[in-house]
Length: 145
Image (cartoon, rainbow, N blue to C red; front, side):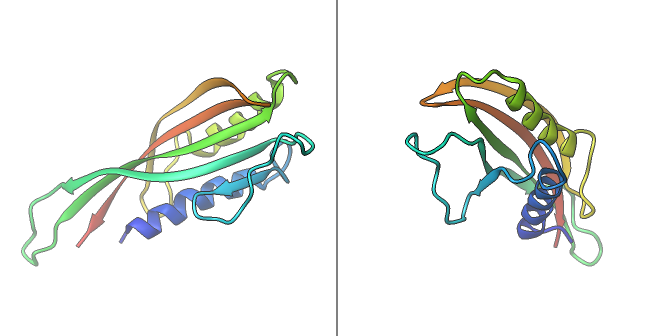
């Protein structure tokens, strides 16, 4: 049975597996939603970094109860990865990092039934000393109870 916790773990596991697999993303800092981490400051050496956030958006009953009183509840949300690369260094590093994320989710589903759809890349632009690009991934799964 896929629960909120299981779905979140599946999403973050798919992301971290792809991210840690090798160049160009291996070793680049990831700030997770609930982790203790310090966003790099402008006085420090400018190294790329990302922020990964899972947000549930909607849910509701997706089926009638069966003879045992069990129903299916559909949950959906968005997984956002914000990619920050040093501003003024060109977009090739940003594009490479974004490709790692897109390739990890496009056309995929997790082993516990989390489906990924509408994967899109949004170039935000300059954010202080950083160039920001967001990858937004819609997800959906069913919880049975």
